[in-house]
Image (cartoon, rainbow, N blue to C red):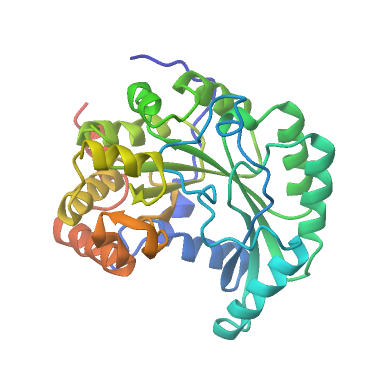
Length: 331
């Protein structure tokens, strides 16, 4: 499979490499945020209930087979509450733990650019003006829910407050994408990435390890593909099989391979080795609603998963991007 890309690689490795140390062999988002905003950053996840073209029939019905009924916004605000109430209720809880934190407003559930431009402009501006302690706006969406107008709006808001755009890729394997009912192919994702060429806001891409029938090579190839774009960050998730999803039904009828913790750690460590060293790692493990979790059970202990990855990286003495440097030096 061959691709042609119009975007150039960002040459910021010398700056970002300072985020690595002997404890973390990669660029963690915690230090990136602290350096960028000079304080502790806490996320407040809001639910705009914009829906998704993969659920309403525009692209498909039912959504991605792994996606929960809340559109992967299980920890977002109550969809029946106003945006103001969602924000203030969550802020009260977070303020008890981090009284001096600043906040990143995170539009997490469903597809948060899936509305007309007038509605998007109104809602985005409403959110960034909720509180002087909001220092950034993170927007999760799909590549097929972007156009020139929306990108221009994001650039406009980015002049006022930092914007982080998050796109769900999950896998570059179109066969897998069809199986999980993603509703768009890799060409559409590539097209969106090329539209985002020369963007000035942060671009974060989500991938999932352990999708049905995928091999370790498939998961490594996701990283190699993303290295060709000027993305700022990545979220690496483990597949969660959750109750009341199409994937749960598929797993019940015909169980597929579920990664063990050791297999997941091995894959993620290799992915980090292949990942460009200027890319910030926002997530290394998934966390869903425990009451809905069918498999894998080891994901319940998210901190344990992260610690095992750190231990294995130290054991192997691998730092982010090392495999890229090795392959370059061997040429």
